[in-house]
Length: 114
Ligand code: 5GP
Ligand code: ZN
Image (cartoon, protein in one colour):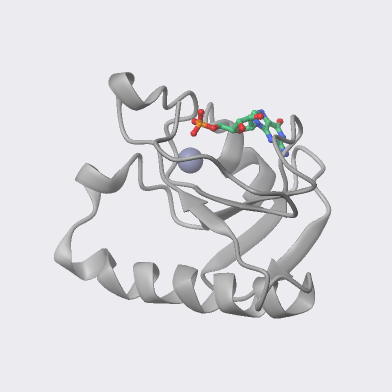
């Protein structure tokens, strides 16, 4: 059994309601939402963080962005806007070591981020 929480979600060992899924990407609601829309978009393949992406993984990045476009349309935030957040490493507060994009929407966001 994988110790990685998000790998376990990919393998359906931990339940998560998929809002989007294709051969390389899955997206599901964050368990502790920080906005009316808070979706996590992850590669099915285990990649720990941005700095762990190899050049062979770069197609994953475009697949993730394609998934974000589809989700923004499906969730009705294409025009109102959304924020994508990718925490990478300790200073950013990355808690789960499996690359994930936070798709946040449904309210105004401040800048600079906290
Ligand atoms: P990070 O701080 O690593 O960028 O974000 C990790 C995110 O994963 C957090 O927003 C947290 O709420 C979410 N999370 C942690 N455990 C689970 C879980 O078991 N299921 C879901 N859906 N989200 C989780
Ligand atoms: Zn993983």
